[in-house]
Amino acid sequence: MKKFATLFTDSYKELKHVRTITTAAMFGALAIILGMFSIDFGNYIRIGFASIPNGIISYLFGPIVGGLFSGSMDVLKYLLKPNGPFFPGLTMVTLLSGFMYGCFYYKKAMTLKRVLISKFIVMLICNVILNTICLSILYGKGFMVILPARALKNLVMWPIDSMIFYTLVKALDTMGVFQIIQKTKASRAK
Image 1 (cartoon, rainbow, N blue to C red):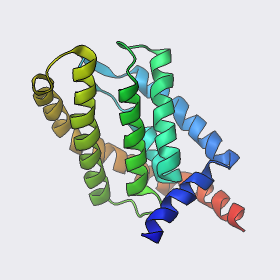
Image 2 (cartoon, rainbow, N blue to C red; image 1 turned 45 degrees about the vertical axis):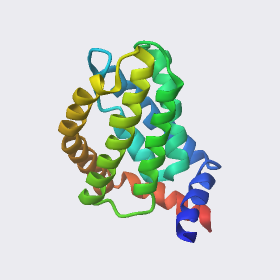
Image 3 (cartoon, one colour; image 1 turned 30 degrees about the vertical axis):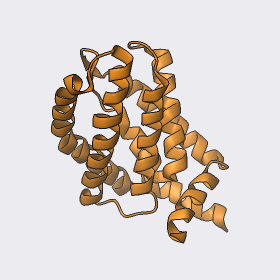
Image 4 (cartoon, one colour; image 1 turned 90 degrees about the horizontal axis):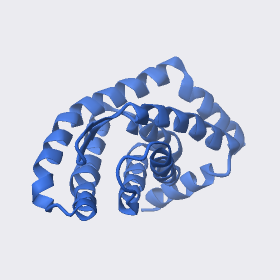
């Protein structure tokens, strides 16, 4: 339990460093660009890859930074490209997903199994259940009317999103992008 609590305190301490803020800003710009190219199928289904930078920030800096980053990016992307009415519940779900990814990834080895499990849990809880509840409230449609299409979309996207995220993180790690950040963290700790 102490190790789990340390996960949050270490992530919170990451907010005090300029490198964290600048890295989050760069990935935030990437998230905004990727968010502009999402494909909408009506009001209920959107396919996009803007969640990739959210996962990377959660991997690098933990659940606190990941949740704050995801929530703030949701609001910023909405302000830049409004798509329907704004609903704070959807922002809270996005914040929760960044938080959950941080719990799965922060200070842990990145494996395909870990990515598949984390993506499945986040997609089930956040995308399928909570987002569908929010959309049901927002648009006045029945939960069970929206649920089948959203569940099918997430089931199809689960392995695709998982493979893209895992491959990208491994490629960035192999290129040494994360080593620069890790060296900076190590030098700060001394």
